[in-house]
Length: 125
Image (tube, rainbow, N blue to C red; front, side):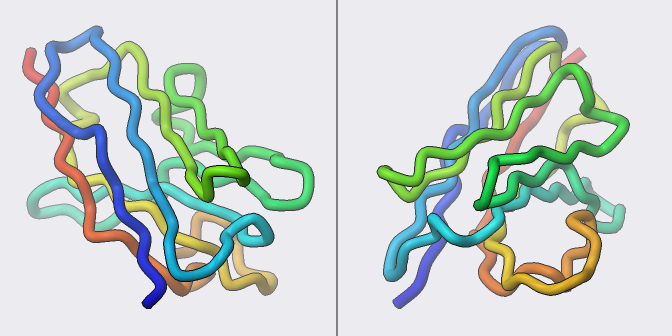
């Protein structure tokens, strides 16, 4: 069974940091791009960041550029999202996803075929 499992969420004060992990199992994700998305209550899911499998190029939403860093460790079949200088607006459930390939934008959720169950991030002011 192919699974992605997120961890590392929690409650943090504004200005603080968290590091999310996304562990894959059931198959190797070393040749998959990986993405992070988030969904706040009452809002649409939005793209946060993505990393390619070929050269680890990265892509970020404007709202997180300079504060978040996506990375991956293929040996551990794990992707990460380092989140610094967190703001209350970052409060959401964060999901990781594995890319199926194709020509859709990295920010398009339809590009991804495996999704984790999500981890809650809450930033207090």
